[in-house]
Length: 96
Image: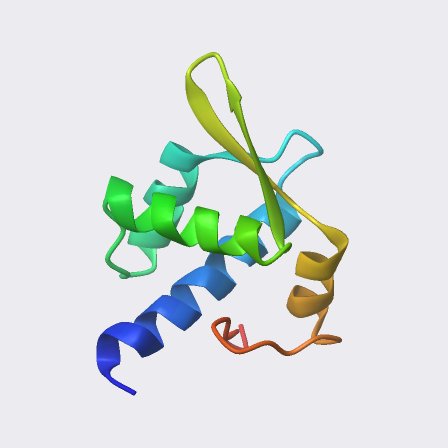
């Protein structure tokens, strides 16, 4: 596994943590991108969109558009990953 794949796993884990800490409306893609960048990860619009789509496709987050802005919410499976009750390939968490 190369560094880009490893970063992707940790970036998706960070996105799930952001969503877990968000209110019931979730978080917007621009907010997620800004927060992920603040942790030093590559987070251009396409990268974040791909990660959100990946999380949605695997049932860890939901996506919807509100006023032209992509919004995402965590699912119960996503919460189980953040809590450490579920481990899946493609998502890694850092101990904060």
